[in-house]
Image (cartoon, rainbow, N blue to C red; front, side):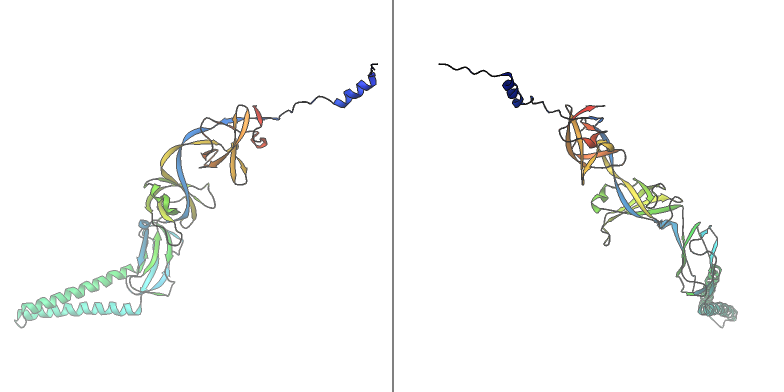
Length: 340
């Protein structure tokens, strides 16, 4: 005998409830962004170096004591601007120099009298022509020595040979200086010299006559343009850097001021670049998001030169690719995107 089982409506409702709702598909988030195209541009390489501004070698003059003397008066102290011909320091002969000057004058007078006497004696035949010539030579030498010392007396007032600034004065009033010792150093502000330190490996890429943008470390807005005048590729024993010398116009930056110089290097090349806003960082690693087929892909990059709003990318992207700009910070690798 067959048995029939009849399910009541309540049982059907229970089974239906046990099955639960149908699974709904996952909805992937979509980010709203703007993009920029990676472009290749001609890159002029530069290197940043540090150093200071000094007086140019040809723009410095040293005033020396004509003989042993004492400093009598300082008319223009160190740091004082002077005009060409302006008196800077007044000297007076030392006691030893005064004795030498008096002796030279006496020798000149004595030898001249001896020469005149020899001439008179020659007229009477008491001396020979050779003796007269010897007396004449002695008189000429003594006279020249006296004139030389007399001329040096005129140099006891040391005057600036060029317009500029008094760099230094050796000694103070009352102090004695030896003959030939530099007492005053004058520096011209017309042309100045910049000395910068660079890695020896790149010294060969710096061309004579190349441009250098120089600015004080304290204020980058006070920049001036200089021209490379010499390159010494040998490393300094202390700094381990090669030296680059450049000529700069006077007036913009004072001598002795520490400066930064941006030096142009030989050669140029094409390199891809992106707007600075496209760059993101994870620690020290820079990266961008490349957009292909509506999907964002993270790409680690190596940054090259970054002089302004356009940053050179040394590796990681190529010209023609699309990089995310606005909204890039909220992206994740593989996220779907749509353009604003």
